[in-house]
Each structure stands twice: as C-alpha cells, then as structure tokens.
Length: 449
Ligand code: GDP
Ligand code: GDP
Image 1 (cartoon, rainbow, N blue to C red):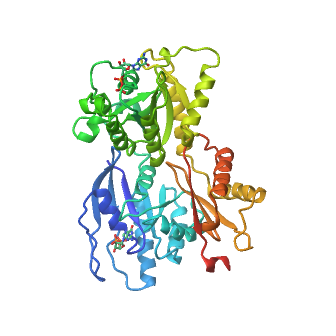
Image 2: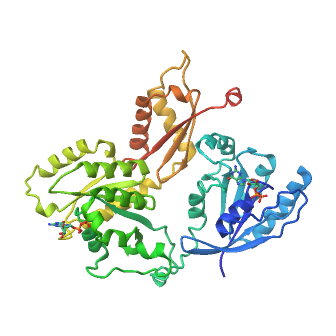
Image 3: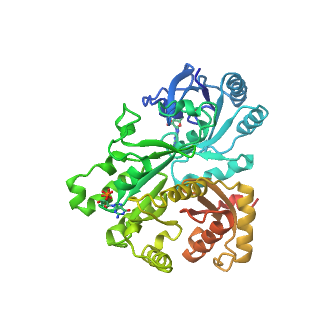
C-alpha cells in the first residue's frame, strides 16, 4: 500500500493547484464558480523516487464562515483517519484566519505527521506576508507558491522524507532503515583538471559508464551511489566523462556545462589543477558556483605532481583564498585523483558541508542570538531614529536564508549586513556554506501593536 498524503485547508488556498503540480495533471481541475461540486481527487504521484497517493480534500463550496469551519473540521477528521501524512495549506494573501488557528489546534492534538505551509508566496516580496503566521509557533513553517513552484521542493522533500524510496538500486539494503535524502554532487572545472578521473575514482570503475537507473534520460546521466551507509548522486556523470572535442578545445564550454549541472546539485566540487593553479576560467566557474548559492568544496587536484615541503600547503591556501576571495567559506582539500590520495577526505567534507547547508535554526533561538548581535553592535540610525531589527526568521535551507524585518531595509548597509552574516556564521554554525540575508520592511500597523 502506498502512503496517502492529504492536502487540507480552507477553500481557495490553492489545494488543487498543489495537487495538480504533484500529480502532474497540469490541467486545472479547480472549478472557479461558486456552488460547483468537485469530486474528491486522488492521484498517484511520486517525489524523488518515493511513491504515494495524494488526495485533494477540496470538494465543497461553503456559503458562510460557519460552514467553512464545519466542513474543515470534517475534512480534517477524515484526513486524520485516512491519511499517513498531512499537508495543511494556508493562504499567504489572506493572512492567518481564525479557522486556520482552530484547525491547527485540532491537527496538533493528533499524532500524525503534519506539514504546515503558507501558499501564494510567489516571490521574495511576499515573504513579509508570512510574518503573521509565525504567531502559530509552528516549526518549520514552509512558504510556497503552489502556482509557480517556489518552495514546493522543500515542502515535499520534508513531507516525503519518511517514505522509503523505491529505486531499483540498493533497495533491500535500506529496508527498515530511515531513508535520508541523497546528497547531489556536481564536479565542475575546466577541461583536463581531472573531473572524469575523480568521478572514476569515486565510483570505482575505470571503464564502464554505470547506468543503474535506466528508463529516463535524466536518471541515466546521474549516478546514485552509496558510501559509508550514506546516499549520494553524482550529477551528470555521463557529461563529465564525455570527451567532446568542443569541451576539449573550448574552455568556455566548461562554463556552460557547469551552469547546467550546478542547477541540479547541492554540493559542487570545484576542481583546480594543482600544478597550474587558479586561472581566469577557474575563477569564472567559481563565480558561477557562488551565484547559484550551492555549497562547494575547492578540490586541488594533481597534488601528486606538486613538489612539496612543510610550507607548501599554507602558501597554496593563502594564494587560493586571495584569488577566489568570494569563496572564503569553501573548504579546501588537496587530492590526487590518479593515486586516490585524500579522496575519502572529500566525503568527510561533503557530509560536514551538507549538515550546515540543511541546518534550520528555530525561530526563537535565532531571535535570541540576533538580539545579542544587535545589542553589541546596533544597526546605524535612520533619520535619527534607531533602525530596529524587529524580528528574524530562517524560512529556507539550501542555502540557509535569513529574513530580517526592520524599520528601514534601505538603511542597512553592506558593512552591517556583513557584520550580521559573520556573527550568524560563527554563532550558529554556518561557517563553510553560503548563506543569504534578506532585509524586509516591517509593516507600520504592526509596529504600533
Ligand atoms: P483550493 O480551492 O484550495 O483547491 O484552491 P485552488 O487550487 O482552486 O486555488 C484557488 C485560487 O488560488 C486559484 O485562482 C489559483 O490560481 C490561486 N492560487 C493557487 N496557488 C497560488 C499561488 O501559489 N500563488 C497565487 N498567486 N495564486 C495561487
Ligand atoms: P577532465 O577533462 O577534467 O575530465 O580531466 P581528466 O580526468 O580527463 O584528466 C586529464 C588528464 O589529467 C588525464 O591525463 C589524467 O590522467 C590526468 N590526471 C587527472 N587527475 C590527476 C592527478 O591527480 N594526478 C596526475 N598526475 N594526473 C591526473
């Protein structure tokens, strides 16, 4: 039996929009006219190889607030009885309503896993609409746009995390164990730095291109594998191994290849030729990594070719830090894909970086810390009044993203942003990953409360 995921929430919060997205029935089932009956919609769906049945509990058009609440109670009760996992959607445009609050109370009194999401947060400028919902004290609170897909990945990754993956490879080995999300790794770098040598070394095959997930083009170019009981996916394995004349002759092409793989990875291994050092092309690829906001590790390869003494590594690190200033946070490792030296260390770093990249700081703890940072070094005044940071939250991971609600975002200068970023990195354990800070204007009417 497949697990059942129920989407519940008030009418028009976007349940069927989310349902359609998950069931990939893009044609809207939603009927906008009031009074129209909608059938209970079931569909088989899957997420990252985890299969489930999703049910959209819509199917009524209430005429009054009272009936909304009545029907929501009924809907919730049904979902509680039938579903294994529940997604409770709220409407970021409408704000928090009393019926939301009541249903949240009801949901909390049961033992089933519930994932709470605020929908219609279509872009960063809507993030401020989430503010109200933090009153519920829900951790974590997902912010999504069912219509545009924003944040849906995170919600669904979490909601399906406990469903066993039904991938053909390694299924038996995992039965009974909790299945973690695989870490997606991209190997990027200019031609001849040793990308395919490293990939071969990691996968332990010299000749064959492994193709453990036949069927779809997308799966067949990525290679899932296991190491030390952890699951990983090497993104675009075939592309890395393919020795096209173009990529050999045109260094620029490696930037395009990197661009494609970076969109699909969590951690990028940026390969640098230890003998040649950092070139302009390397810096370009590293810049892309920064832009994409993925975690990364600087892998200095061909270290076997470098003549070394006691100070070689120190000097090399200093030079690398200077040449790639914008990636200060990225760990550095010196390896040889040829001999296999320290390739294992790459995985220790991947695991460490992943832990930071996916770390979520509870809102209360974050605010307690931020209060301290601000007390020690307040934000510069704005028009002779303190530019108070009212509230902070971390709505996202991958990369960890922090939103600060302040009186005047424009008056937060780069140097103050850097101060906060550094304190967060040190104080909350985000030292080796990119983080994002967003400053939003606090609503006036809320200031008065
Ligand atoms: P349901 O009654 O809860 O199933 O809600 P629907 O899926 O029918 O959506 C209600 C309305 O909200 C429709 O007009 C959707 O286009 C709209 N909607 C759904 N999701 C989003 C979203 O993420 N952003 C915005 N702006 N509108 C959305
Ligand atoms: P790619 O174009 O980035 O995929 O690079 P390749 O993996 O094809 O490697 C380019 C050349 O560098 C090949 O001749 C490899 O044998 C060699 N190479 C790769 N890694 C190492 C290494 O760690 N040490 C040495 N000495 N040579 C290496």
